[in-house]
Amino acid sequence: MIPVEVVKIADDIRSMRIRGAGRIARAAARALKIAAERYEGEGELEDFLAYIGKVAELLASTRPTAVSLPNAINYVLMRLSRSAPRTVSEAKSAVISFSEEFINYSLSAVRRIGEIGSHRLSDGDVVLTHCNSSAAIAVIVEAHKQGKSLKVFATETRPKFQGLITVKALAEAGLDVTLIPDSAVRLVMKKLDKVIVGADTVAANGAVVNKIGTSQIALAAKEANVDFYVAAETYKFSPATVLGELVEIEERSAAEVVSESYIRAHPRVLVLNPAFDVTPPEYIDAIITEKGIIPPQAAFLVLTREYGRTITDLVVKATADLEEQP
Ligand code: RUB
Image (cartoon, rainbow, N blue to C red; front, side, top):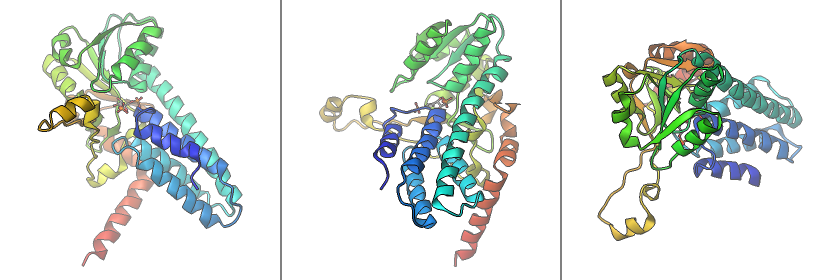
């Protein structure tokens, strides 16, 4: 039986009480750790592996777009399998220690992105950010700590208003921050020097999937010749996109956009609520990762370096699937 605490984490990710690609990834790793700690059976190793597999499936099914979620799960499961445990107790310790390792790696990656990215911001810059990205905030806050005077605009980010979390964090860090409606981005663009956003998934061609509205901001930035940066840990890069797999864009409930009573009163009105969009690489000046700053076109190189083994496994599987076809 999957422990209640683990089911609760899965539920919190699905309902967005836990949100943001990095936090989702760390929550999944924490859930795997808890699942291993709470496992009571002492018998067959296969039973434990089947149980952890079920926990992984539950977690992976919560939200479809951020690749950080399956990447975090695979981080733990691949290392578990490579460690070739012989007993349940060895397998439990492996899951616990690899989950902790992922969480620590993730937290230090965000800090490192802050340090690396801060050099891209100059004293006096006016910066815009969208949604609520820990990685983008780390860059802005680190530059501010270095004594650079910055002015930040942050979008509300409808329909879930994640921008309110961002302005609170930036104001608490002592930054000069202004909240704007999403629709004010093009008007404000004239005042900006830089845009910096986070990512849920980076594809092999350098396209970035991030909160809905990001691609419109990138378009406006391109038109105004404003630098557009993405802050993304390497576990936001998607190995499956190397094989041409498309990133699923999550569609959420209409009730996040208008009230239930509005929906009932206007049965002929359809509401579409896509949670993410895709910004093409041509609109992105650079991606700031914990391993350094890259042009979006170098995403493929990051993927082969970080996920070489996963990509090989995916190719082997795809080839076997093809051979099985009549
Ligand atoms: C959050 C979002 C964030 C990225 C990056 O979407 O799009 O920009 O996840 O965040 P949601 P971070 O609120 O729907 O999860 O840098 O914190 O990983």
